Image (cartoon, rainbow, N blue to C red; front, side, top):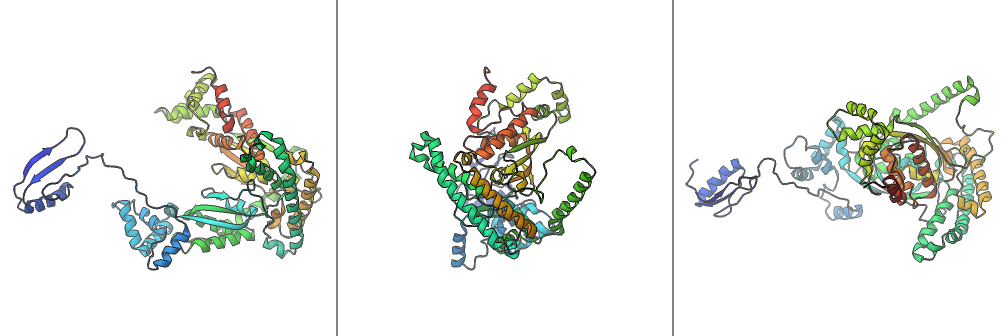
Length: 570
């Protein structure tokens, strides 16, 4: 290619990383030829008789953050689809397909999205291949669904919210006065116990409304300063509602909003299809029907496996055999455990105190946290840091941990190094308390079934207004109905139990998560049941890792605790 002479009237090369500017005085043909050459130099074509093109030195590319998508109400999407039936790209699959190509395609990701939108069927084929054939399941996490879930029981919500990587917002029994709506399980109908079940629930609901009418004036009278300001009316009414709710059943109808990605959606559909509760199985089917046609390439393996169906059942059977054998060969007084309900045990006679037991904790936790802080603050191997931490005296470890906490505010998370130590608690708590504890999704939580032998949690305010006896009478009637259902349809027995009934919960938390739990649950604004449970957990934790948990407290008590811990220190 013959190039014409190019006269540069200005040409600057900065000495520091920056821009290269060129000004060209030449003919149209020369500019065309220069444009061809510019492709090799990544300069681009000149505009008219001059050009100025940014040349980015290596490592100086300009960052870009492009909004690729966001939540849009599905009713709007349906309106668009109705107006433009030719549109096939109203699906989250195209985003997942585009992101799946990032690792192997050099094109900018926004261009990959454009390609995917233009070839939806190819995008779906790509998803099926990458997610299911190649096993890159994380691609399905880029497709996200918002789901309205209505007319489900409180008991089913517990099963739904076992899936920790979804987001939930549930109708509050604290802020909303519940009506008498409840779910009658298919198992109860099949067992011929619908009339007994319904009569018991109606008795529970009558007690609920009576409790609220008695608790409301009591709460206002106990808080005259708050009651003087009408702005606090909803707050005080909420306190009355949250204590009245202890008597309503787990069959109570509720609703929630859920946000979940396709990967976890598929898991939820499959696992709940294997749940012995018929309501959970129906929910699984409805969840599939609501989402599968929107993203068929990402929601595929939804049938329960033998692992899903049989594992829990097999473990229960084997556990029963092992326990029976050990107990038969051991004196009862050597087994220091609480027993569950037996056929001859009187209903409603269980203990009514909360129970928090620290089962296990990281040994030498403060030392290990000190080592973790040394590790992240140095270039030494962790083993070496642990050796150094083992040689430090208590004052040295305290000073190091205080340095990590000194700038902390009530809204700050504890340092990530605190995740390297943990605690295992067994909690014997009410359904009301568990409903809040389970929201701490960074914790590892396993549960036993609700067990009337563990007693009930009676709100102190219920005792104060003289309603303890009626409350216990309803619990006794509830447990009689529970026993009938347990014998005929054990998978549905828990529906009739109240929010006051209890279960055992194994809850493992890192020290960092315990900080978070304390911040939101040990705070005076938290519901009293979970607040007292959280306070006991922190107190037990401090016995084994006092330095690590120096600033574990509710938001309302943080400033005072901080002042005590750092008193006299500049």
